[in-house]
Structure formats: structure tokens, C-alpha cells
Amino acid sequence: MSDMNYYRPSAFPPAIKNLIIINVLVFFAQYIFGPSHPEINNLFALHSIQSVYFKPYQAITYMFMHGSIDHLLFNMLALWMFGSLLENSWGIGRFLFFYLATGVGAAIAHLIVLYYEMAPVMEMIKRFPPEDQLKALYSDVFEVNGIQYTVNGITIGASGAVFGCLAAFGYLFPNSLIYLYFLIPIKAKWFVIIYGAIELWMGVKNSAGDNVAHFAHLGGAIVGLIIVIFWNKSRRRSLY
Image (cartoon, rainbow, N blue to C red; front, side):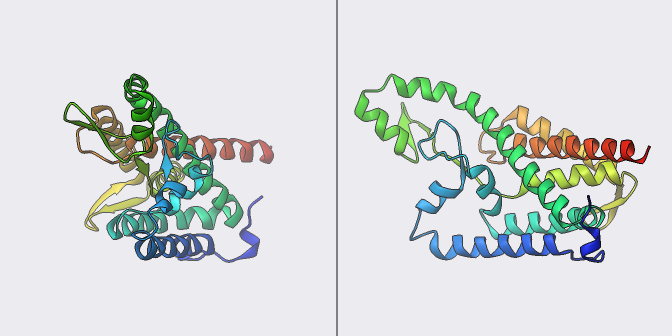
């Protein structure tokens, strides 16, 4: 059931507004308290399941944290652009479920990829003496033969959930125009396909120094598509 009866369609619907407020407040808390409390990242950012700091609840908390003001602003702008029409169409409850589900789906996709990427590092650590194993497992970075490794890297940001919103927007409103750089018009369906292809290519390429979680973005988009296709089919069945 949609929650549309509880509020009127809005350019700034309530769930979107409150998600943006929460993300902004969390960012300021990170900025103010983070330097004096580095354990904030250990507690709430998403870690590989091989990390000693991994906790299941991080699959939700990570999506409310951001690494820079640019990171925050880009995600919140995209959330408003693509999420507002979805919330107006679905209502508050359904949209919030969708947003959280796509964020968790993005986290799971990222954790699966991380698990396989980290497997060689974990095998290397197993060959260390016991005391060095502990140092490596709890350190931010450890070095072997001049090469730096870590098992405690963090993933933060709402991008996975935002990609879920983008994918749903492209599926439901395929011919809507999106203006790249506010100037170049492109239909939503082509924007989603091209952007998804770029993310897949960048994820497979896995360039050195690229700290973007491309497979998390793809995971959020795929989960978003699965949910919206299922909802559409269920709605059609209910109409017959």
C-alpha cells in the first residue's frame, strides 16, 4: 500500500528532506568529533568481513556517513533529484524501505567483492608470526617488502542507495530528460545504461588509487531494479 494519503506530492517530500537532514548532521558530527574520536569510523563505517572491526549493522550506518563536503553534496543532490519523484509516487514508507534495501544491497555486493579481493592478503597474514598477525589485523596499514596493505579500509556514503533510486527512476520514467552539467539533455534510460556500463568497466578495471566502490553502486542499482520490477508486477496482478 502507498502512503500517498498521508501527504501531498511535494518538490521536497518528507522522507527525502529528513534523509538529507540526517546525512548533514552525521557529516558535521564526523567533522567535529571525528579527529578526537577515530573509533567512529571503526564502529559505523562499512568494513570487510575479514576485518576485526566488521559489524553487521554497518551495512546500514555506512550510508549515512560521507568523506568530504563534495561527496555529501553530490549524493544529496542526486537523492533529491531522483528520489523525490519516487517518494511522491510510492509514499514515505515504501520509499524508505526501498532506500534502505538498496543501500544494504549495495553493501552486500561490495562485501562479496571485497572478500575475494582481500583473500590473498589474509593468506599472507596467516604466514606471519602470531604477534605480527595481530599487528596487521588491527593496524590501518602494514607494509611487506615496501608494499602497503590494509584489511581495515572503510566504505562510507549514500551512493549505493542513490544508484538504486537512479535505476528505479530510469525504469519508471525512461523518457524523462536529465540535463548533464545542467546543459546537455539525455533520456533517463540512456543515462542509467551508460552510467551503469561505466561503473562496471571501472570496477573491472580496478585502477590503482581508485577508491570508489563501483560494485557497491552496481549492487544498489541492481537491487533497486529488482524491487521496482517486482512491485510493478505485483501491482499489475492486483489490477486483474
